[in-house]
Length: 318
Image (cartoon, rainbow, N blue to C red; front, side, top):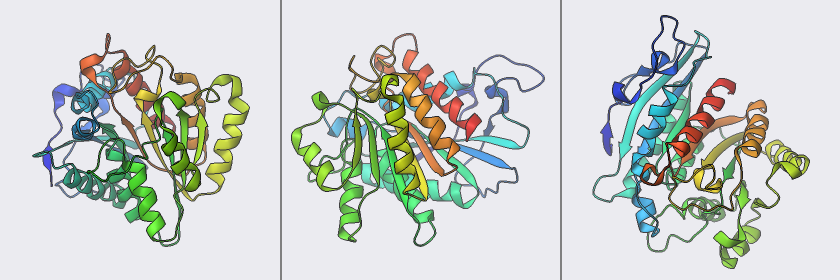
């Protein structure tokens, strides 16, 4: 296992009550190295991917290794509306040792399958977007034979760059696509919020030739809500399970200044929440992550609060 750090209680701060009114009072701390069995109706497993090695390799601005704990510190302050039969467990962080990103991705796969084998829903806190490769593999290893999993990526970028010089935060879906191609399968991939000013033409060509679904940012907004929902429903109907990944750099910097690659031209939280509602109502969600929070560039914890609010929404609706 990579450099694994146990969860820390001081990441879960906030108001106190005698009724578990806040998530810092609801949270349970545990270890991925300990036997674990969910005895509740619902268990949500939080794990941090505390690495920015993929961003560094991709020539981005580093700092996303600090993201998981920054999300926890905002999430703990938020109100708890979970019922008594729902467990919320923090399993700490996986960290990158000696720039060995590939081992970290492999360890994440093992952890994700561990959660699913124990009837827990994995929510991974990032960390650079290379975690998607490890997360997806863990979900895939859990799938029953013959079942399909679709990827829904909220992002400004396709992250379909070739990994000729090693895995980076820009390569995870290329890796997944080429591995499916080797098995004569097509990747089930939908990217929402893609920007032409953030992706080269060869990435669009790769997406087209591999039959990837995508919506450009100019159409991923409330003005086109009906169209967004129709495209999403069509994609969801075509798969058995869903893996959802939210890259915070897809949001406009008006909402998310603290990311690895910020831009004022991104999407807004309202269209993401509408989309998440459809995903959660489908009952097909198998795992979710929130990535690319970079506290070094955040303003008044605005991006950390956005990330925490998204997680808060999901854990109460899943």
